[in-house]
View 1: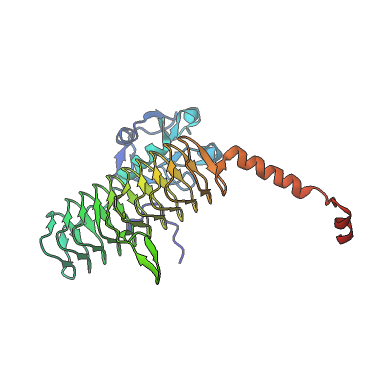
View 2 (view 1 turned 135 degrees about the horizontal axis):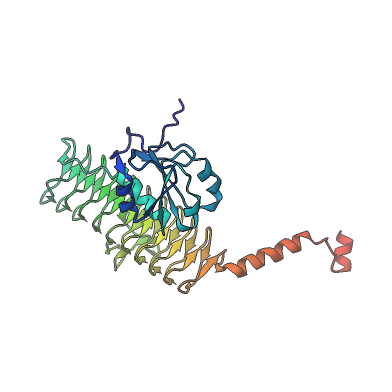
Length: 358
């Protein structure tokens, strides 16, 4: 059965509001620029795309490609950048700002804040000895909390999550269903989405006369504040030192991060990328989808690694690389252009043997 309802379906999301334009402008750090026929007393009830918004919805524009939709929208208010302030429809209120997408995130969060933890421990949950759990923590059905675990105020532990002995979780964290976390120190406001695996054995083994022998993995995983880790991502604990995920970083679904890896602040690692053990990322590094990084290398601050890139050596700060092996963007695309030219050339036998074979 098809359902074309607007964003923020009340069956799944918390709803707040309505809000006047002044409150939205405050959240967005935006200037109010009203169209010539815009009402001044409207209360806005939700967010919606330009195509389907109504007079009581707020929408946003951040890409010139969608500018034609601005002239057609029925939205009562639109978040947009300075470049579009002269194109606000007569019936609409413009919230003009420097960073429309950031402003949109804040406006949408105003209408749909994160659902707070529902204090209490479900009767089916298993809780170990010597734990410290804040009074307003939520522990869902069939969750397992090990011995000596510490869980800070406002945190929610979802159904079937397993928190190993000694793990520390900060305040206002969200631990999704079926998450397994062990050997980990987790900061404040961290989100682990469903199925994430934190603190499992690193991939370490020695070769003996009779085969492989596992090397004890004696480190931890340290996740700093304001990190989000996607569904089914895996982060191995360190072998001798900690694996560290820097504050504010975003790890997508299905990412693998090896033992001893060190990620700086606000790094982005996109789905299916793999970071091998003991690799170090600076601050604000971006790793695109399906990229692979060999171990024991350093990636400088603000470097960007392209999709499906194979990185086998250090990358300088601010560099953009792509390809396998990784190379600067310009070099990669020059190589692609040369290969395309070669592919279009007619075959030219280089010797008599080639002619005979042809």
